[in-house]
Length: 157
Image (cartoon, rainbow, N blue to C red; front, side, top):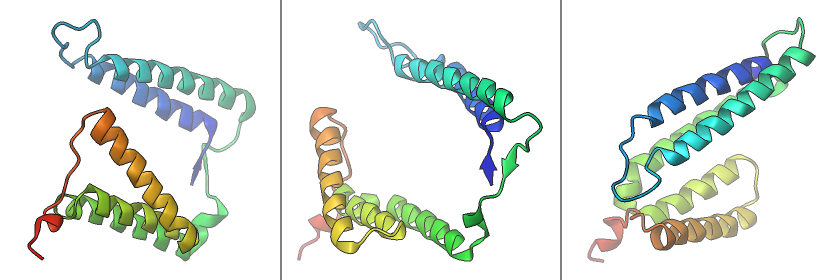
């Protein structure tokens, strides 16, 4: 099912409104000009603008058209099997990331998702490794967000 611009614009606008009101509930950080609500508010305003733009564009170009269409890929069982496999891989990541650790579980996740999309193994592995290293550095060193180290590496081998 493919959403038309009108439907996608309406959903984006509703999400932006929901995010706007949800972010207003965040408490301010003492001693800072900007609180925890600043980034979600900016994102909600930008998303609202995109939603309005999609609605206007959809109303101008899709008069009388259906709100949804079903693309050809959705009629193929193999496509649905790949979607289910991706959901299983992501659920597996959620279940084992604390035990296996961020680095190993993310490497498996990214490589598996790339293989599901048809990427060759010799391309998927280095790209997955580079992605995990960049994310580990960005979160662990720059943003100081602790990522799971994993009990697996702490086992006595």
